Image (cartoon, rainbow, N blue to C red; front, side, top):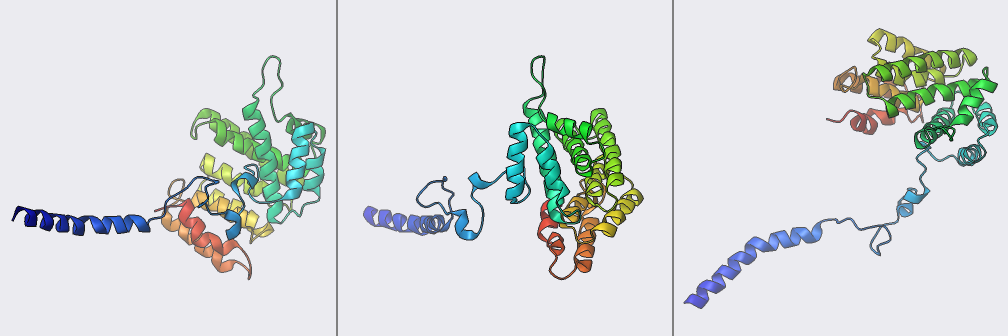
Length: 269
């Protein structure tokens, strides 16, 4: 009889444990890169991690080549020439301005300078000194200041506000040098978020961008941050902004993408 009770107990235990074993077999486990069972991102249309460059929002071989040259030689002229030949209304100009500014900012972070060492990113300072009327250099400088504010100071602090006010002035300078270029105003969207522009001030800034590049995806994503509850709006305002952008987007534009996936990632529930 005791053996029968033991067998019954084992059977009952099997009913309890078996579902968990089966469920465990159905789960997806992460394996390290290089593992025989690891999936290759290239098979799914994605770039491998080693091919990604944190200095760039998207692939641009010309930009990669120029960035390497500028940082190797500390000569800004290749960057100046690349921006001069880039369409002012396209996404690529905004990407390139971001990349050059980010490269200078990261250089300064890595080499802040000292008694016997010059600070990193000096090529951008020389660019602005030698070519004060160059619109590309002015736009890069404005974006550099914005990135410095977010990277080195706490939002709301005096240091943060001082750098952002300087960035705002730099955006104005860049806009005067290239009246048809939306990039200085796109840079200012981050200033608007950091300094807490009123809704009226933000709307005036946004209209300047729409007048120059109404379907600019990068501008829409930058503006979306301002409308989020985390900053100066609400979840409802952010989704209303994204819906309006999608509604007025021309056929084939990438702007509607911010309506769903990007809005959800920037303004999570």
